[in-house]
Image (cartoon, rainbow, N blue to C red):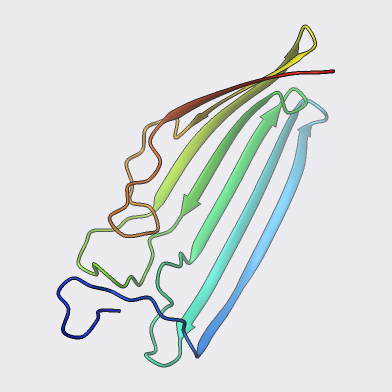
Length: 149
């Protein structure tokens, strides 16, 4: 929280009396065996700082990750969702929202070489990361080429 007597100075401290409870569910389904798979993970968190009776800062209540992969995992689409955080420390009046990011992956062996590519944040979603006023990852492209020996 804010440091007494210091303008725009904040200090992070351990929470001595916290409660964290939740539910973590995951399922993986072969829609078309060895051709098209769907994996979904959902995490629900219910947190509380018992000293001040507020949610723990920077925790999203709902977190969802879905992966659609096909052709023996050569092609993949990943969707990550985080609901809006309820509590922050430094800039409580800043506008916040939930976060949804989509990534696209491709991998193939070509002439004995593993070629992998990934586009992160495919739709160039602008969002604030968990740390306040820190922009989330912009669209990026990664290409990896690994020879097999």
